[in-house]
Length: 455
Image 1 (cartoon, rainbow, N blue to C red):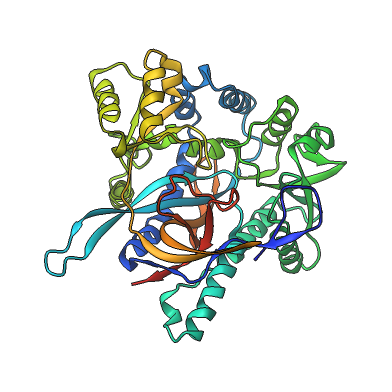
Image 2 (tube, rainbow, N blue to C red; image 1 turned 135 degrees about the vertical axis):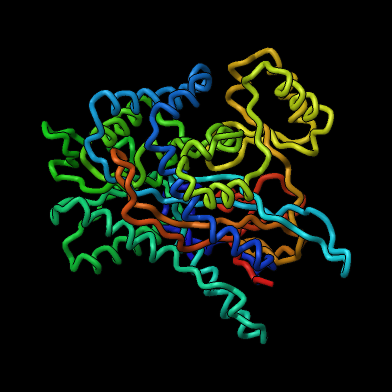
């Protein structure tokens, strides 16, 4: 549970922010989120395979979002040239919060439902830290005489490593590199070494890992005549991206590096199409009538549609000028505490609440292009518990807290015929913030790693 100190380029490390004990979480809600993960992964895989759907979804967004436009242009070039590598590895984390729906008439206890607040199919890391947090809490529970079996096992990092190895094997070249695409200032350096060591063990010393930033990729990547991706002359079999396509603003050279990757025969983990399939705009379109059903037309998959729709949160697009859209905007201005205004990007943050939400809606009222770059989401009312926050160089902090559950999984599929060779859920996280904070992120210091204690 060690992070590299990120403020400067140095060799200092610190322990990751963590809660003292696991936070209570309803077992039924946890199991529901776990159960729907495979269907959710299949949905986003199919979305990423449907380029025409993505082009239509982003037709208004590209007018104001240069980053999205550049990535859509890359996908158009991929479509024009033909997909060179149909195999792709989707690595997904689906994020949820509890939402109060009432009270039990018999005992007066609050009742909660679980709702999805975000889907992430881009840069997924930190799973090793999540496992160690769970193991730490299980040990502490034993010491204080509580049942550790109520804190579920968490082996998402092992599953991720096995999935990356599976992708490398699928490339069928024992000399091919596995490239980890990451920022130079990356907090989870120790976790990456663990991934590298385990891949070395699984491959009996044959698999070589290389670490490349997008900036370096522009200079060091080359496309061969047969569309192989070369790194300093060596063939790349798999590119595991830890640089968010939606959350990181790449410059022209870095975007060119992305383009080389997408036009190559390397197996992408994930492909760019899948990476941009989890924006807020796509989530909003999927939540609209017929959105999920488009990707599950077979009646035998109706149970998947039902399970997915049950965990959707209220989502509304703002680009339309129809009466329904204007009514939603008017209600959000009148009752801002019921909504969150979110930009299209991944990774959370930059959201608008309360008075700032009202101000933003009013300032962009007549700007259809800016409205298209945002969505309104139902504001949830999560369960509040108590816990201690433990952070490096800061005294322990006790307070009322709320938790966000993340569920991990991977899917290996063919983007041309849309067949799936592997689809499994494994691993979870609990990210906990102070109850009064609107935003909560471990990497930015406003939340801590946690684990669920099921009841």
